[in-house]
Structure formats: C-alpha cells, structure tokens
Length: 204
Length: 177
Image 1 (tube, each protein chain N blue to C red):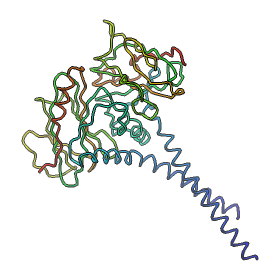
Image 2: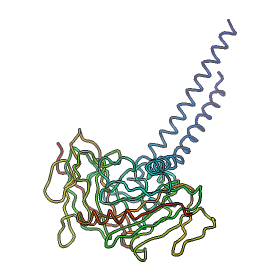
Image 3: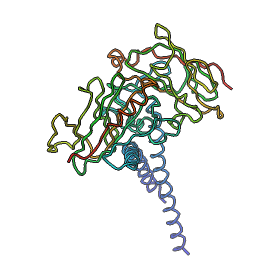
C-alpha cells in the first residue's frame, strides 16, 4: 500500500512538473510573439499618429525590431533608401477601423517619391478594396502648394480615395506612408517631419 | 514534496520561459526569411529571377507589398559559388536593387540615381571568396549564404506600365560560371 502511494505521488509530481515546464515554454514563446508583433508600426519615433524606426532594415536593428520587421514588413529597405511611417490610430488615438471613414490631410513630404497604402490587420492589402489600395505622389490630386485631402474608408468618394473595403464588423487596419529617397532634412529629423493628420469623420 | 523542491522547479520554469522567449525572438526573423526564400525559390529554383504580378489583395507571400511598384526577385544560394546579378535601370522613375541576408537585414542597395550607364552588373559572393570578376562587374560580399535579392520599379504612370514591366524583366540572376 505504502509503495503504491509513493508511486502515485511520484507520478503526480512528474505530471505537475511537466505541466509547469510546458506552461513556462508557452509563456516564453507567446510573450516573445506579443513583444515583437507591432514593432514595425511601433518603435522609436512618433510624429502625430505615425510611427517609424530609423533602424528598420538595418544591421543596427535590435533583435525585437528585426523580428517585428520580419513579421510586419519583411524585405523593408533601410532608412537611407526608404522611410516607412505607419499609423494604426487616428489623431485622437482611436484604432483605425474599417467601419469608419477618415479624412487625411497633409502636404507633400520632402522626398523624391511617396505613397500611402492601407493594409489589413494581417499586413496584406485589404480584400474588397477594388484596386483602391493606395495613393502616391504621381497619382494624388493636390493644390499648387502641395497640400492634399485624402479620404480613407469603405464609402466610395470622389477625388483622392483609399478604400478599406466592406465594414466587415469594424476590422482594424493600418496606413503606411513610404518616403523613397527622402531629403536629408527628413532623415536627420524623423520626429519633426510634418505628416498628414488623420481625422475620423464617422462610423457605421 | 518539500517546498525547497518546488522552488527548484519554479526556478527551472523561469529559466525555460526566458530561454524560450529569447530563442523565439532570435529565431523568428530567420525562420520567416527561410520560408520567404523557399517560397520564392519554389517558383523557379534558387539563383533564378522571378517576376511576380503587380501586388493586389491576392498577393499573400510577402507582407506589406506596395501596389505602386513592380518587383523582381531572386532567392540566392551561394553554396555552389558566386551569383551574378544584372539589371536594366529604367529612366525617369524610382528603381532600386536591394539584397537581404538570412537574418532579414538589408545589407546592400543601389538605386537609379547611383547606378551609372543605365544598368547594374553585380557579383554576389561569400566574404573572402576568390572571384574572377567579369569586366565591369562589381563585387558584393554577402553576410550569409542564402537570402533574397529584390528590385523595385515605381509605376510612374499607368501609361508606362508596359514599358517598365519589360525593363524589369531584363533582371537576371544566375551562377557565375
């Protein structure tokens, strides 16, 4: 009897230790995934709703940024070639949602070429956008002073418009502003660049 | 079980969690890059140029593709020796050729402003490799044996799409023999 009890205790103990170590393994992996998940959008520099990191794509990237870029922006160029600003919220800090319409107003940045593109939460182009994924320096309608107003949302709009597809219950999305061959003044002051404002108009 | 025994297991659990966390962060870019490299190589094999269609919502291989660019790619593998990369640089639009190592770092880039003479001719080789460079070619040392080469061509206007698509298809990626 006593031998059986000791054996039973050993089995229970072994099971408890195994469960503990498996939990620890899970905690380690999941915390790493959560820690790097939004590194491409988050990171070092914020300007309004837009965030970037000067070390994207570079060998100076830390392990978290490198892992985050691999998940959210694989094959991104380094900052000397292209700067990627990403916004996941509007200027009021509310997460961008496919259930809402947005007014994006700004002025052409000091760069050779630029574009704004909308991406779904899975980091691919939004399904159901009917080809209205982006606007860029060559296609956007703008004033003589370089100012522009862009509409972002699922409701078709005249002029500059990026579609976020059907509301689909209000899915999160993000906007990425790419600056190709940015001027030296931009590279040296990523925080000080005047970037478009993102204002929510209404939600369905 | 004695309390001291459990303390030992809890300490081991903490070590396991930390090692799993650090390993995951380190491995993620390398695993994702390997998957992307293999996916690109699955089309034509290693050291062969691929020309994916213009990105739209059905493009699901590389995250955050730009629908305003035309890409050409090559999954390189230097195990059998250096690889030669040649490309025609289109006029009056943004163009670049970039190289990414196995850890995802962008270790080389040349754009249309820097490229001289409307073309680039590069030989990619492991560090320290003795390479008989063809005349006019430039040597680039790769930090890893495998990785990806990508060209980006801005579609400057819808009217130029055909011309720019033809230009990107001059990109070649092949073993230097």
